[in-house]
Image 1: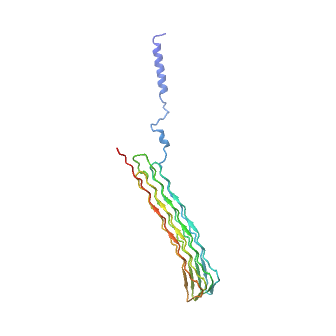
Image 2: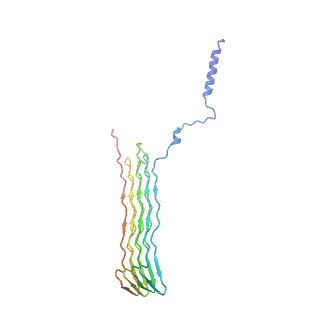
Image 3: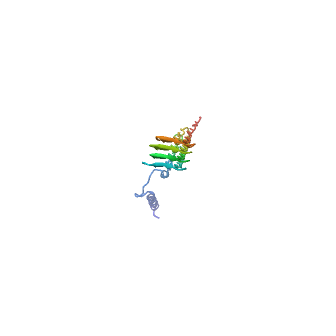
Length: 276
């Protein structure tokens, strides 16, 4: 064997190894960690809003005579009763990893008033027994609103750790009883039990519960909605001569219930301090 052959073969092998280890010019490398591609979104709780509800008031009754008489038999002319109009509950999502809990807003509820009765004519005679009765009010209620709790965080310094979500319940509509109005250019005669105003219904706003604060942060605020009117229906007779011949005629309706919900602010959690 030639004395210089072995060193030459070692140099060739080393060159091949270095060439195989060097990345090609078409290879792109990045120093950013791959875990950043799978980073999850911050754990803030979602907000909740329930929709507003419409009106469910009872229908009115209108009798209008241009020249002749208006005569109502027993049990004639009754305003419709109000139904139920209720907005749904709103619950904010809970915060995660030190983020804020979601806010909650329940929708406003509409009116649910009893229908009214209107008689207009040259002369209104013989309002019979139990005629002209205003409808009773129904139910108008807004849903509860519950703010989400703030999430706890293991980080010492978080930009907005653990604040509780706010809660606002919606306003409620009116549930007043229907009115009775008799307007005549001449005489009005009312028999037994004629002309009764409708009873007021129930109008109740939902409760509001603020979310709990975490790690020394503020608890959520709570605001309950305003409740509407729940008046008893009125009876009005307007004419040249009014004769109430019957008993228990012209009775105003009883008032109903109007109540706003409870508002409870969220508790703030005490921050724990580490003692060295």
